[in-house]
Amino acid sequence: MNFPSKGVLPDILKGSVATVALFLAYASLPLIGMLGGLLAPLPGVYYSLRVGKIAGGAIVIVSAALLGLISDVRVLILYLLQSATVSLLLPLFLQGRSVARAIVLATGLSLAIILAVSAGYSMTIGINLDAEVQKWLSAGIAQTAALYSKSGLKEEELRALQDGLRQAGSVMVRVYPAMLAIGQAVIVVITMLAIAGFARRGKLQLAIGEFRDFRNIDHLIWLLIISGFALLIPDDTVSRVALNLLLVVCFAYFFQGLAVLAHFFTRFAVPAIGRFFFYFFLILQPYLLAGVAILGIFDMWGNFRTPKQQNL
Figure 1: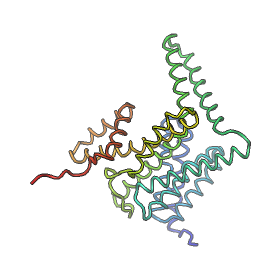
Figure 2: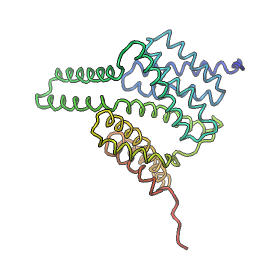
Figure 3: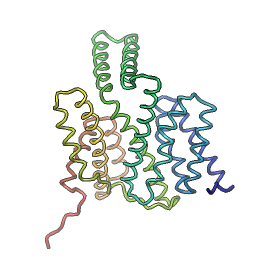
Figure 4: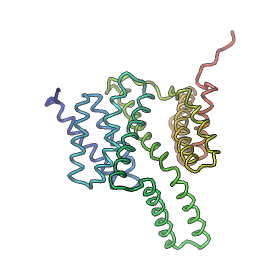
């Protein structure tokens, strides 16, 4: 086994410090710290691709040790499951595979590890983890509603807000598995986009195609169709599984829709300010999100990015 040379040690130190800083920001700062959680795997992935996998693994080990010393054990476990898995898996799957396949494999195996650890934990202490998560979500929604009741809102406004929170809570209880999967996929994708930026600037020797060429496998459409029809089955367990599966598949097509839009932005030379405003409104407007996902679905048949042949 080849251990890192002395010249690599500063890279390991820099990567570890950056990882710990990002993840502590994520664990400590509400809203603003979310960006730290999205980028926490990046130092490990970057140095693994630039220096070697041993250096990337060393960054994960040192970061975990530092977090174990200066933070709560729950923060350490969250780092190991959410970020460390991505730091280790994404560089592994990027070698000899397409970016899309690497993203799918890294996300899938990372989620499998999270589920295996969660299942093992629930079996060890003898609890129903799904029921506990649902109870925790319901308690959080109830606590939020109670806080708004003391905010001085008018009675009608307060009642409407509390009804909305209860409806949102009932939806979250059903779809939190899909939200977990989508959240982990977003972490992998954000990390991959950052790595692609380093590669384009020549800081990494890595062949990465353009995002505007991204396309899901054709057979994914059958999963969309099957999960959609499964929602009609009058069984709560089946419909819940189908709903979560449908959301994950729609998320995959949302990214294909974004790739189609990126293609047209490049083709028609849309200025950066125009792209910024589009993505800004995309974040604010859920209906636009659905529209982009639908665009990705119909791209399977329309091939919107294929150059049209001109009649001579």
